[in-house]
Length: 294
Image (cartoon, rainbow, N blue to C red; front, side, top):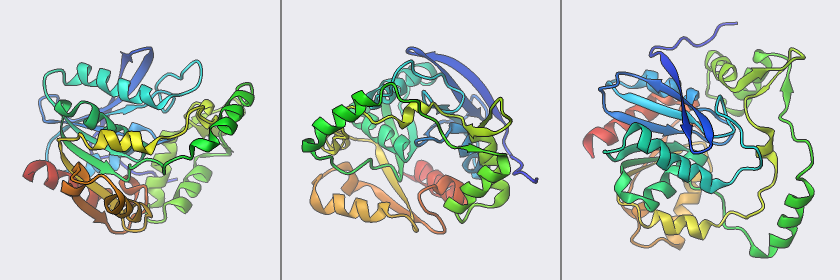
């Protein structure tokens, strides 16, 4: 079973971030300019490997595994989105206490990065949002049923799907991301999976992430944060993804005179939502061009 061979070796580091033992994937020379990557839901920082290998310039790259994902510790109870924002702030104090961040986030990580850049605009010099504009506005009338569902499911056992082997998981990754090679899909599977006592594998993530959240997503609050972003901003979308239509709708309906209207937008060919897996070479080129020329 042939697997992707990395060009730039990663190193694992662990730091205490608030109440969680956080795992960090780190690449490059410590003296090189620093870039932070934030991954999406059920992903890990290690899958930015293909982008790292595609960079033409030398960077120091740090990609944490968010709490409850990858090799980071799990919460004792459920998960709250604001924790990710507070974690990023603490992580900045560890790795870049005196300089603003070059912050890149994909999907959920893109939403975290963008909200953080609005909450602490002085802490982010460059922002790259890769398909990370959050969920649609929720209906407050759904709150009673949402709270009820959250309460009733507290004691329900949650579990991620099990697979017989890495190849089976790789085939599922390949099916969902048609432009990824099987070699890269096997590499991603190896990063996502952990072996069970039965010999099977499952995603390296806390099953409690599958529990419904007690509070609904408030898009208006996210947009209020986005309006305060002062960082130079690049918005990245996959040509085969539906997110581009979503951002056009945002532009048309609200956030007048906002960072979004002033940002640069790039559409990546041969890629859906998981751009860093399907076309990392194109993504890496756009990121470097943005950082070095903006």
